[in-house]
Length: 320
Length: 152
Image (cartoon, rainbow over all chains, first blue to last red; front, side):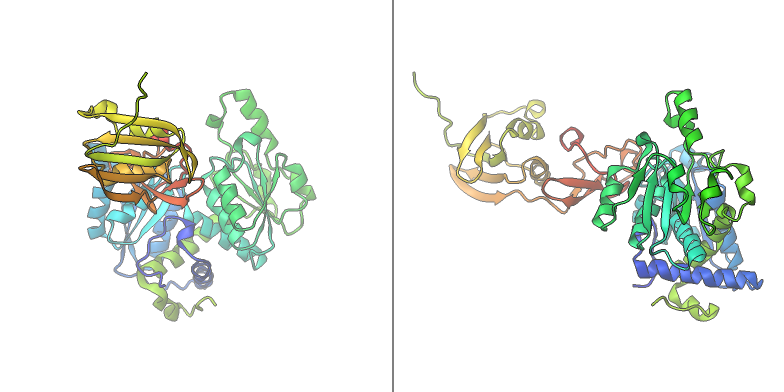
């Protein structure tokens, strides 16, 4: 089935071949960007960025991706400036926007908002994050970054660290990593471990992750250390927060025992879970990860709007 | 003393093969207390059953069930059968069947789910597993842990 005209609300809306096609196309986009070539694949097309909740990276990288392909962007960056404040439903907003644009990215505070939007939109809808729910383009760019570093995902030892319960990105990432055969270790305080439904979904795919509460023993074995932020508001007791957050802090010292090729990723924004001194090490790949988001979103937008025909124009390969 | 028997009904519905212990929940689903009933409602609990060992039975006189009421019953008593009685005859006899999607009869447990807002949609759950029942919200993908208390 072609990607043209499809919506992407959850990473599970894409099969393995489709994910690989998007990642391969993103590789091509990055190669072209490196040569300062900007293929005009989406000249005349309009993307609507509907950000009911604030976002920096997701919104700007979609905007950058669309513009780099010659397209245009309309939209808003907080719900307060829209008629949602006057009581307009998301359903009505989406119906209206379908007439103004060719695809829409939605970020909303309510889980399921993007899925609902697909019922009312006549254009492809991309979920840019729905509450504590899904964030599929983050998962795509995480997979892209791991694949770029190791040439594959299968067999790569990935440690997901921090808030695995409420962290929006780690749920779909864990499932996607399992789909592509990575080895998973889940490192979190007991109260913030991966929810049972995600563990069940992993088990259905034959994956039994190693579960740890301490970070230190995991570092020497990991190829990927995927850090997430532990949020203060998850803890009723500030002292308990300080103790827990402190024990999941990645420092240059802690990384001394890491494999030479190990990479550190983070969906950003980070607060203090990765010490700023780590930025200067070869392990730090989180800013590159954020840049990769533009290439991945370029690939996704081009494929959803125009389908596989764009591959001829950029010299890309159809995934096997 | 004369034994009190539950007699056959002239018109109405007999919900048979209810999972033992669930009869009062079925009565709750039918909203007998809220809607009131002009005729008799009989509840039989812990009745011997060749098929099930024990079962419950609910008889509602002068009322036939709406399809959504039958869907609701299927969520808590998946083996129940619904018999429509007209003039003492069993006019229709059918087993309840769990639909593949449960639409409009449950509330999502996730308070932050888009289906719990003023949007023009009905709640929608996919049946992931029939026994034991596992439902997942089609919007936020949260699993339902308590069907009864989330019934609308």
